[in-house]
Image: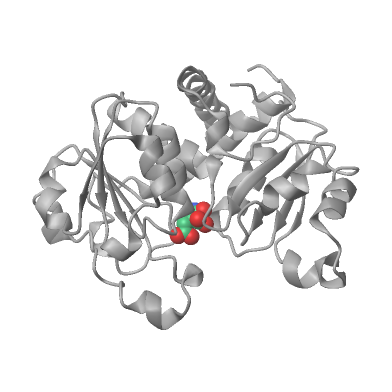
Length: 310
Ligand code: NCD
């Protein structure tokens, strides 16, 4: 697994040993971040570098996380969070041209787009590395990395864990990325969703062995990791269609009474009813820790892409 000078477009680029080595770099970044936040010591690891964030789809965490990571490393950021409406996309500029153009100005690009494959399209003509910050229901490699890093950090292992993936497995790119990364470790996959929202076959093939159920309460006491994500309403034919599935999976405090004492709850956020605020104070809830881990993951990624050693 090589990051230096590379595009990061897909979780398919990763491998087991590369991931474990990368997680060690992320751990070092936790110290760099702490030095900055607590001791006011600005890192210069990416001094002089410019990140361009091109977002064609809404985002709160992911864009801020990429930008924070670059700023914490002493680099700078240029950003458009509304590309569909305010960039030359309006004038029908192709993704190829946009990639070529922006790469004459920035040293690295992070991009999100509603269509599967669009980030790879922009990357084809970019002269600098492009990172996929989510392409439709396809992939979200940095979210997958930060989710699995959080599991590795919290549980101090990956092999042998029972991981429950709960909700809209059909459309959630986050779940797809999690599966593609966790498949390298000997985890027991428990896929929890209504049949209509089950994990697409191509991902089932990748993970090999798994259990599929529709009712979370039947398996909750087996899970070491409870990974939940909202119904991806924007990827349904209609909002009404998505509404049918809302509220079917709620990680409530009553269901958490049956969960293992040392289980962890992950969610990429945003959340709706599937993750009520009543469990935010449950020590097993790790979704706000994930945010900080995400900044460290992206810091590590920039250092690796630029070949900066910590
Ligand atoms: C996710 C995404 O955009 O895929 N959010 C994120 O990146 N933190 C999950 C979601 O939108 O439900």
